[in-house]
Each structure stands twice: as structure tokens, then as C-alpha cells.
Length: 194
Picture 1: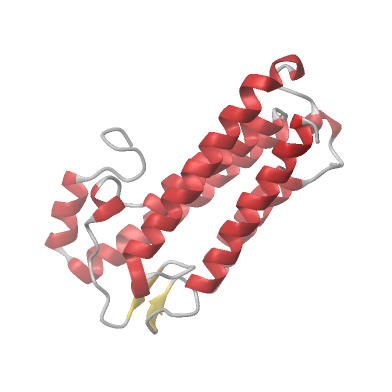
Picture 2: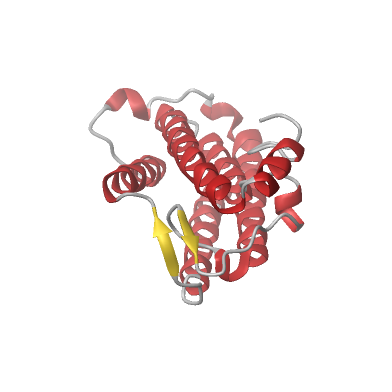
């Protein structure tokens, strides 16, 4: 097996393992009391579907997006770095998902008996699942080295920014001053920065 085949298998394996884990975790969650409106939720989901499509498409109708932004001659640096970032990001999302427990939802929502979770990864950033996914998207895009990866990361950030606005609004309505204090203490996506 060549290194290129190894890394291709690596990316498929870690993303599929993450997806399987996510599906298993989604089986035991609290009932939803309130969720984001349907149209914005569908648009957000569509953006994320585009991200995954861009990251995994072998052929693309726009050849310019298949052009490299990183030199193929340096793949020995970019692909392993991308693998490490992808794995770290996905593991961070799993840690956050486990810590969030039954309060988790695949869409912006309020759960029955919703709790404000501020420990574990939520002590580092308010939206660790989005932080981890962003890191995983960046890692996979670096490994691909093509402009479609850059576009995928940009669309991912747009989807996360939209989702964060909605979730923060829900959390402020649900938890009031307690959430405001938490938001003053902990950054949204990158510890100490964003």
C-alpha cells in the first residue's frame, strides 16, 4: 500500500467512524420543546451538505475548483498535517457531544429540561462541536489541496455563523443572565480569540 492510498483510506475511515458515532449518539436525546424555523434550518443543512459534497467529490463540474492551491509536490507535509487536524477536530466534537449528553440536537433547539452546559470542552469554547468540525474541515481541505476545499471551509463557516446566531438567541432566551455571563467568559469558536 502506498502512502497516498493509506491517507485516502484514513480520511474515509475517520469521517465514517465519526458519522456512525454521531448517529448512535442521536438515539438518546431529550424531547425538543422549540426548534429553529424550517426554511432556515433546511438552508443551513443544505450548506453543510455542500461542504461534504465539495470535500468528497472526485469530479466537479467546475474545473477551477479542482485546481490545486497547495503544490502537489509537498503532499508529504500537507496531507499528514491535514490528517492530524481532521482527527483532532473530530475527536473534539465527540468529546463535546459526550459532555453535552442528552441536551444535544442536530438543529438549533431547546430541549425539555434543557441544562446550560459550561464544563469540559464548553469551558474552552461555547460551540465546541462547530470548532471541532471547522478544524476537521480545514484539515481535510489541506489534505485535498484543491480550491474546492477552500470553498468548503468558507461555506462551513457561513453555516456555523448562522447556526451560532440562532443558538445564542435560544440560549439567551432560555438562560438569560447566566448565559450572558458565560458568553463574556468563554469565546464562541476559538479559545481567547473568536
